[in-house]
Image: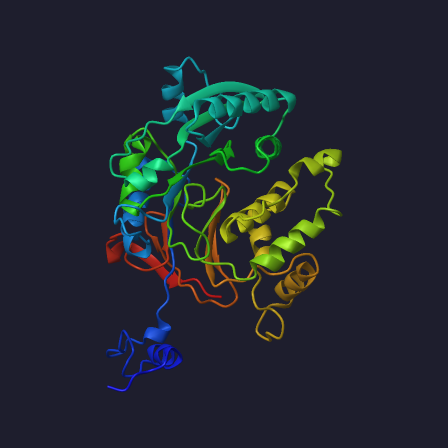
Length: 427
């Protein structure tokens, strides 16, 4: 057999030649094959909370197992998780046993914290949280240790496993609206992250705020999809209710797997990647010198940096979306600014919509994928494709007012007779 040079071997592997490692079969073409994460959500359009929504969301997640990557150890995954609305009845009962009395919904927040394994470092982080919560004028209510079972995790993943703590923060009477409370929580999270970051000169000690909100709560980690429910005992509790749930199984493409880089983030989860990241992050950093807002006044500098160096593409996008929403934009408005349609030169687009995109093009450059992006603030949930449209997303609506969306069809068995609408997202 003729010996091929390395360049010839690579070329024939790409073109499906006789020396390709995987030959084309039938309609399969290796050049068209791409790996990507799995994402999906389920929501009750009437806003009715139930444990069934969470159970169905976990079923969607487990059916996306093939979308995830594993290491040499098949029990170590790139990451998986779920975002839900705050389950008030469940948390109120759990906290009562800890002598923590929670106010009514909307008047307190819960944060999921990854804390350092080292007890001394963990105690320092807890002191920082308590001090800065008081300084920002809010009320520290207490901590809850999140019950977990790590027996399904590989030894490598357990070595990096954080300590899981839920922190509860009360809303004072001076904060009159839930939106204002959310902005206060956003400020606190930023100043705490900066304080811990500066204390250890940027060294990662294992402290990370998974979520902090009066509306949403995130459970995530360095899992395979079928390990999420097994790990977090809360998710099996029938008292845990939500009217929507967003799930994600990660296939790490441009960053190494880690606990904090699992999805969902605080607002988003996506199937794909942001390939314009460097320019996007640089432009966001440049705007810090000129941005102002009456909602923050002279305190706005406490929010910098919008993103830390070395964060993943999704983390940076999540930070940008959150910054816009906390600055007063609606969730849908902010998402359309960051991921616009291909409006230039499109004669079929409505003129008002074209004017919207043209105006915002002067304010924000597009964050381009390929990506199917899902997002939620706990009140609304939505999804969009970037303008290239190279990541699939299919959805259907049922006659009992549920919408189910995922990166592929068939993730949740539903009787065809119940489906009133079935379609796909378009770029």
